[in-house]
Image (tube, rainbow, N blue to C red):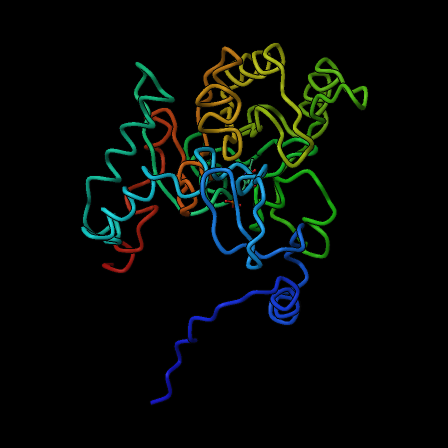
Amino acid sequence: MQNVMAEQQTYSDNSLLLDAREQNVPRGVVTAHPLVIERARGSEVWDVEGNRYLDFVGGIGVLNVGHNHPAVVNAVTRQLGLVSHACFQVVAYPGYIELAQRLNQLIGGDEAYKSVFFTSGAEAVENAVKIARAHTQRSGIIAFDGAFHGRTLLGVTLTGMSAPYKQNFGPFPGEVYRLPFPNPLHGVTEVDCLKALDQLFAVQILPERVAAIIIEPVQGDGGFLPAGPAFMQALRRITEQHGILLICDEVQTGFGRTGKMFAFQHLDIKPDLVTVAKSLGGGLPISGVVGKAAIMDAPTPGAWAALTAAMH
Ligand SMILES: Cc1ncc(COP(=O)(O)O)c(C=O)c1O
């Protein structure tokens, strides 16, 4: 039988590999730097030619503790020696439950929160929307200009940048409405944005049809723009007044990125749902939604498990 496993190759030239990349990886995945890295440690990376670089990007917020942090490597190695995958819908295992406990405590504090886990940030965002809709029994979702919420179809729909993320990918899922995000550089004030919300309620969708407002406490892709405390507190008041959920997308801002464990903790508000990913896994693909327990329990048993459907 033909051996289908490619042999492990060694490379010593960035340009040769980049040529191979050109031929084998589609152009839609742009790689910003003309180098191919072989290994990394802490804040340093080495390319295949042996050049050493300081990594100021950290996988775009994925490696807040640096590359190959010993605690991450040890935890992963230990877990691989025990069990790598069991499918939580089939059997439980301690890591899932312990991680949920930890995040619920970090985000919920004294209040009862629950957590559910997925693989990517976009998947967490999509599921936060599903939870919000299930809980409120409403359909409308409000997102912001300049937002980035992922590359899945709903993710790009929520994303507030047309090119390149949405280019040629429509039609998009419905019931997503947009608001401007405060941007002093472009003269968009917090007051302007709150007026736009009033206007949106007046002409596009009644507040009682809105399930959630989703916001990055600091827009990442949108230009590292923070939402100020007064603005976030106003959003919190308005959402509470109308029974709308406030979702903080902390996929990029989470896990110490802004100096606190989560960016909303600078703002004197408490979101109903928080999406987490990136540095949650320190380089491994894991994401989650953490939220108020009663809201998190809105999806019915089996909503996230094919098993029950298969049994019927
Ligand atoms: C705020 C935010 N939400 C969602 C995502 C999507 O995460 P993922 O790429 O893991 O799907 C990102 C990714 O950059 C992000 O910055």
